[in-house]
Length: 622
Image (cartoon, rainbow, N blue to C red; front, side):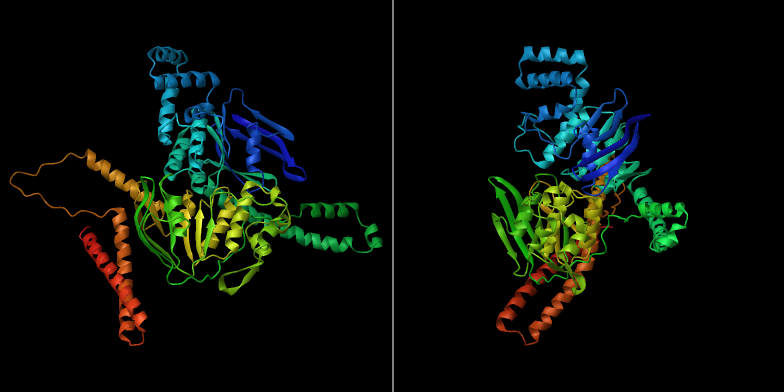
């Protein structure tokens, strides 16, 4: 039975028509993902369904009694005094008032007030909701429900909004980018929760793992028309490619017919006057069916061959404290060429602080940092940039750069580069104020890349970007031969680009994990399962007269990865030591160069000894 029925829905903003005659239904229990490029009207459509945006024409009909929960892309709780009030916003006003009074009475400790509030809770059977509230706030790490909503981070705001909408026990959930600013473990919990609940779902998200895991239907909004795919995201990508291939073949046939008929139409009026009227009508029908196929993917774009010197970045025992709180402790690392590193950790663990330390934007309170002279940072921050509304898209880029150098020594104009990042020439002539939020972020990204940096730092680059843009960016960064540092909650993006991870756990320490995000989560799950097994396993006492058999301890997943990395790096260190030794014995080095080479040899030798010792420890394990 359809919970939601949409018929002939249309929406325009001035001369810009987003869609016309849009129709679809959403059945009970169906979970649909809505995919479209930035600016196509995804968020506008969700607002219309939620009653937050006016409808030009058409109807939106919900089944009688349907409870609808709506999560906007941006939430504002400034009118709520505390987190508890904000989280209760999604439930019915009567329940909200009674549960809030009970929570306040419990907080005050006044016996009379608490007794009265508990009686009211009994009357409305509010204990289940109160239990769900407590569990939800704990799950979303909102430990202090009476904390003021002033100064909330983006992640905290998103978690409160999600808690609020889920507590309303909706029959239909409408979610706009629910995974933005969420830690991966909370995203995984949300996936599991939504997959197992019987509610219906319509979601806009760029998180491809989420779409694969949760959705059983994909709605694609393309050039104002809606296409429905009965399957998850992987199924959609396969079937969409087939649809576009069929469309290309059809368009090629139409173009051939059009060219032939155009020659006939251009012939002399005398020749045409005797022809059948149906042929003229058929020509105009063919002309109306011709269209440009936009598959929303940019052509291949190889990153520029940027130069970066041997000395890039060296951190030695770096610490950073804010008052008594030490956010970063004893961090030591050297960046190498083509080092692609992901940074993961819970919100508040110090990811942004680490980024600022690496870029030299904040000073450490302990240790030392050296940044090479050839390093040119390019920084794409979480904060959206404000552009002068009177500027055109193309002017934003050409104001600083007319061309960019690409891989292989080729160059590209700013107009061509914008086109590759899905700004067609017509859109480039629009004023910035006409762009959607996602399009402005895409423009900001193009501006950073046009700087041609050799050390790219991307802080949540996929937030507010559509999937086609993310795919273009992934392909570009895959060929980037400078250093790349990524902070992102997008697991697919991290898996594609990060070759190892800086893992922040919130205690100030940073570990270097030799693998991508999926490898890391797999290791965590294996270690958790192993710990659980060991907890439940009862210790067996060996026979009194027999010696217990010593079993060789097995390497953990992380230790196995570390062991493999050591086996690869030790021969390389040996090679570097030999090269340094040959140089020092050649007699061609100046005294200063000889001293520098000797110091480098000492550091390398120390690293070799440490790694060999660790290799021996790990080799003792199975």
